[in-house]
Image (cartoon, rainbow, N blue to C red):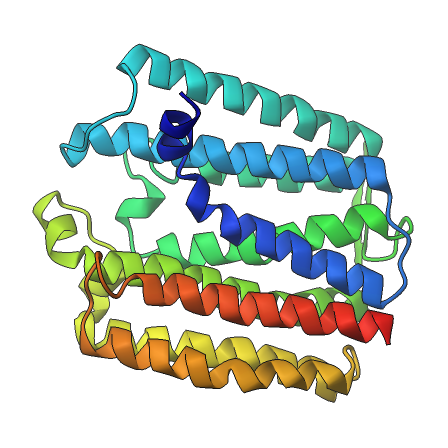
Length: 300
């Protein structure tokens, strides 16, 4: 029963949300920012359960278009989706209630994009936007929300709404810091989607699913795969250069050697069964090393 559920929601793919969360927690530890345990746990639960729901929706829809086998009856599969969405929505609304309207707005945007990623007349996953959306929503919004709910009020954004005016103040340095911190999770998350779509290119075309590799062509898609890996390291170098992170974090650059081996493997053959795993390996190597060195920097 549990194994069937885990297969339905593809529990193994949840590293993209979990590692982005852990990396941000390491950063908050590094800057000695106190953690609001209640809000942090509520956010993690809402984020993680919603991630499960979007994967379930994706699998539910795919069984209609790709002739895949559904783990449950369609009624049961649909009920699981509604339960997951219901729980994550309640938790998200509670988080917004305990914080402010900014979290409500960002949460609503994330919710809408998660739903319409594979659902609706023109799903995001069937367009050349899947990589960008997955990278931004996993790689940027998770760090942003986690930092925002743990920082003092008006430390990042300040939104004031009245009957006559809407005023938004953006504090440049904290926003730039979050953007730089998010480069690695954005690029590595997008790369998993890019590798998946590159491997599935011919199959996707057959079901009229025109993803980014369709427009780029396989050769340019695999080159982009390599570039995104390198950009993840560039983000760390920039953060150290701007003294946002400790020079100790440059130790994560040593992981370029196994990452390059995985890049070379994928450049040679793009196969879902044998080489797609290269993208996940690189994600774990890059995000794991960055999280570790930031945490160690906080200890030292």
